[in-house]
Structures are given as structure tokens and as C-alpha cells.
Amino acid sequence: MSPWSSRLVTGQLRLAPNATVRSDLPVVAGGEMDLPASRNSRWRGRRSARSHVPLLVAVLLLLLPATLLLSSAYSSLLRSLLPFSPSGGTGRCGRSAELEGERFLWYAPHSGFSNQVGELRNAAVAAALLNRTLVVPPVLDHHAVALGSCPKFRVSDPVDLRAAVWDHAMQLLRERRYVSMGDIIDLSPVKAMVRMIDFRVFVSSWCGADMRSTCYSGLCCAVSGGGSLPSDYGRCRSLLSGLAGSESSGCVYPVQDDCRTTVWTYQENNDGALDLFQPDEELKRKKKISYVRRRRDIYKALGPGSNAEEATLLAFGTLFSGPYKGSESYFDIHESPKDHKIHSLLEKIEFLPFVPEIMAAGKEFAESKIKKPFLCAQLRLLDGQFKNHWRSTFSALKEKLKALELETKRNKNSGPVHIFLMTDLPPANWTKTYFADIAKDGRYKLYTLKESDVLQSAEKLMAAEHGMRSGFLPKTLENTNKDCDPVQLPEILLYVEESVCSCASLGFVGTAGSTIARSIETMRKNNVCKL
Image 1 (cartoon, rainbow, N blue to C red):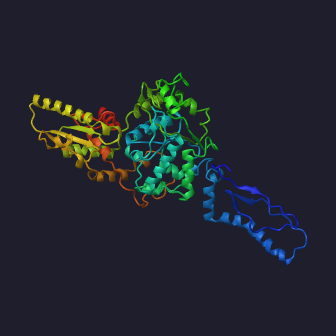
Image 2 (image 1 turned 30 degrees about the vertical axis):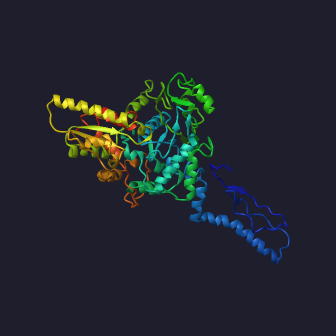
Image 3 (image 1 turned 180 degrees about the horizontal axis):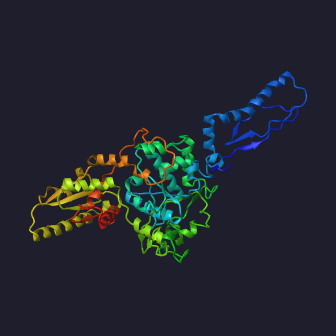
């Protein structure tokens, strides 16, 4: 039997005149249930008193399935076994009748938050291009899911990535630490152009899994309930991951093309052409790589007329991409002059701000705590490659402070230079670093934020339920004032720090190569903070 669908198998019970009915026949075997199609078989011949016992057993065996079907508990179990049956008013793929006819796009985010935001932008473009509803994922813990290296052709398989994202999402559920990307990133600028559904609503509606342990407020509790059977979660993991294989039952089309073989494009005339970046001969020989990277039109490969078109869910691996040696690592769609709708989306998606609660918290700190014109310094020292480049990281800040000192002297200004510092190096470890030097220097005044400083903003953020409100909601809602045990408040310090830096009127010094620095520079370029 296919692992993607279960079905009732109808059979007939035919007994010979002198047959003996066994009482140990299984009611359920191999995940399938045999129900009698006819109960009109005639028994011929004389029946002794002794034959009444097996006859009674046979009748009970025949009546038991029908009796069980009438019970609500068994109906729930049966529905869990038949999640993709067209019966009962549901669509051919998924449980909720309200989702019938919709087609979705799911992907596997990875690495740090800034990378996850980049993937969200690419996913929104792909969903619009393919006319699908984007499933908005949770915010993953930093590097909870790792991709690998596209330039070295050493990356995790898309199936493994999707399974890892599901497993981490379930960890967030169990630990009550769930927060949606839509709770942090303001998706309202693209809401009219991209259909969206929160991961929690999708999983509870499509898979029947109870997601209320991911909720903070009443709206989420009202729309995230499910059957809460353990099998719901395992089946949903298999579906979203594509573990059961490709193109099964028209439900899920798992995209297996990744950055080792493919660069996605749109409306180019070189569909199928070799990409500029290929593995060199030494790498091929050393790693036994046989990959060839080709540029492929995503609309031709996965749109109308393709094998993927009819699938209810199109499941990508990662959608992260970045420039490398004159090419993009995976997703090369930055403009579309031939398609005005997509061109407009690409312009809007270039910068997605934080939600208002985060922006307001950063602006309030700048106005009420710093008060003066200030410099923002973002120094990343502990993570990944950055732990090996302290000298160059500190050097950029030193040069900027020298320039500010000269400007202060020319303008005959007095008083210290105000500096807002965001760094992953804890203050307890500042000893014998440049931080310790400027902290003791009267020419400068340092400001930092702690997680405890933004707790009230985190409460406001979660109560707003932006993630839920940014996409599809069931038409029939339960009581939205429904009580639920709220998840933990998310750690929003990094986001508020970026917001503060967007307000720095004396300039910004960021760590070279840091995606956080690029995010802040984009915020400043878009003039999001107006003091």
C-alpha cells in the first residue's frame, strides 16, 4: 500500500458449506481494513448445536467494523489513516475543505536569521511566479539547520534539509519557543502580491496536527487546533520532507535540484545553458564530483505543463542564494522587465522591514536613552569566520573614530562621541580588547542593550500576532479569546539593535562579510528611522 494514502479494501466473505469460521482472523492487517461487502451468504446443511459458537463469532466479526465506524473515537482514527481521501468533503490532498484547490510552496530555511530573511524573499518571488501560496516558516535557532558550502559542492540533500527544519520546528513546539517569521518581518508590503499561510495554520489544517503549543495569543489558539494524534505529526513530517518519494499521489512534489546542479532563473533565453561557475578539475578529482551547474527557468521547470504543476505542495530545499565568482549560488532572479507584476514584487521584496513593534523599540531607545547624535558599531567577533579576524574588525572602528574626532575639532564641538555598540562578545570578556580601551576613554560614551531591556516590546510583539494575520485564516473561527498557555517570549535583542543602528546619524561601522551588517545598511539606505 502506498505510504501517501490509505484506503478501505472491500472484500467478500465466501464460506463453503462445511467450512469452519476461525475466530482469530485479524480485523486490521498491514494498515488496511477488510470490510465485508455482502452479508447474504447462505449456510446450507444441518447445523449442530456445536456450530452455533463459530457462527456467533463470525457474526460478531462482521458486525464489529460497522459498530466501530459509528463511534467518534474510531472515526478520528480512521480520518488519521485516510488524510488524503476525497471522501467527507475534503480535497484529494489534505484534510481541510477550506484549503481545497489551493496549491502551496514550502522550503527549508537554514543558518542565521539574516540568511533566513534572504530565503524568505526568494520564496516569496518563487511563490508569486508559480502562483502558489507561500507557507511562512518559523524563525529557526541560529545554525540549528546547516546547509554546507555551495562553492565547495558540499551541501545537505534537500530531503534532509526539509526533515531537519520539521524536526527543529517540533523542538520549538515542545519547548514552547515558537515564533513565526511573520511575527518579526513585516510582510504587509507584499501581502497583496503573494498569497501566504502561516506554517502553524497550514500544518493544523492540512495535516490535522495540533499546533496550539506554538501560540501566544487567542487568534493562534483558535486556528491551530488539530486531532493531536501522534501519527499526524509523523505523516506530516514525511509529506513536507518528501521522504516518501517524488510526485506521490499528486500531493507533494519534492524539488531535488540544489545549488550543486542548478541556478534558477526567469524569462531568460538560456534555459539549460551552463552556468559561469563550475567545479574546477582539482575539486572534481579530489571530491569525485561529477556535477554540472545549469541555468534553468523556474517557470518552465516547475510551472504550467510541468510534472510539478499538479502537486498540491511544491517543496524546495533551501532557497538561500548569494553571489559567487560572477554567478549566483542558486537563485538568480533580480529583475523581470517583461513581467510587470514580478518586477514590482522584486522591487518591494528587496527590503522587508521589521514589524512596527521592533522599529518603535529601537527608535524609542535612540530618543530616550542616547538622545544625542551617535555612531553605531556592529562588531561580530565570535561566530564562524569572524572569530579569526578581530584585528581587521577593530581596525574599521578605530579609523571611523579618528575621522569623527577630526570632524569634531573642525566644528569646535565639545563632549564625547556617543557610540551604540552591538556585538556578540559579552562585556565580561572585554578585558584587554579595544572595547575595554574605549569604555575607559572619556572621549567616548558607550551604549548597549540587554535582552531584559526589550521584554515589554517582546510582549507587545507577540500579542500583535502579525504572523497569523499576514496570511490565510479559516473562515470559521473558534472563540479568538480562547485561553492557551503562551509560548516563551522570543529573544528580539538582535532585531531591536538593528533598529537602533538604523537611527545612527553619525554613521555606521559594520563587520565586513556579515549579513547583519548588510541588513543594517539596507535599513539605513531605506531611511526607516526618522528621528
